[in-house]
Image (tube, rainbow, N blue to C red; front, side, top):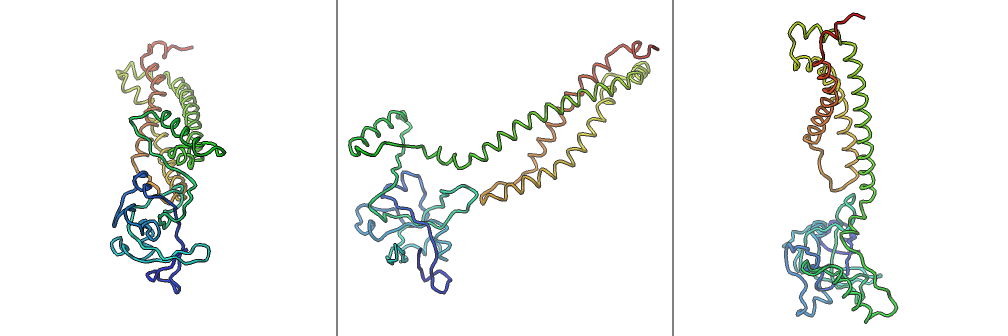
Length: 292
């Protein structure tokens, strides 16, 4: 809970998330500085009076990143108002799932105790070697608290487990649907070819080429697939758009996704139908015209 004269409320109060950090946090996490400076151990007041604010926080303060530097704001800690000076503005970093917007956030050495220790691993040293060294060091300082660790990347990926599971389900059912559709197309192509076997024989006798016969037998299926795609694409676009609405940070549904899907559907259709079409087109017309 904060108070500032730049906030356009009657009392100038608004909420802002606070993250308790030490002086090396920004560098370890790779958070870029937009304006001002980082915390400095050589400046005594940085450990007691200084905070850094993200871009969203500056926006809600109705200030530019440059105007925010040096501003005094009041923080409410358990009912006590404490003055803090903004020394730097950093880029927005989203610690929540992408379904939520980046909150206005301030950083600073607010308390002496920390809940987590972040360690940046060196790419030149095996990760397990570093973990073993950390566990050994931890054991020398803490005899009762067990050493527990997670990778930040895994924690962030865990925020999207439901999306990953949904993606896997969609992939499996899509493969199943394609297989069933191919079997149906193959059966329909076989039936259609059998019904037109005499027509194919007559056309071959009159000089029709294999490519002409293939096109004759395939164009009806291509037409049906194109009609199906024209119906399905707007529906898919709407459903994908509705699903993306739950994300504060989302991509757009591009037309090339549908173009690739349509092209793939046509290729699968042609491959499935062509087997029967070419088989019928290369058959002996005498067999096709023989009277039972």
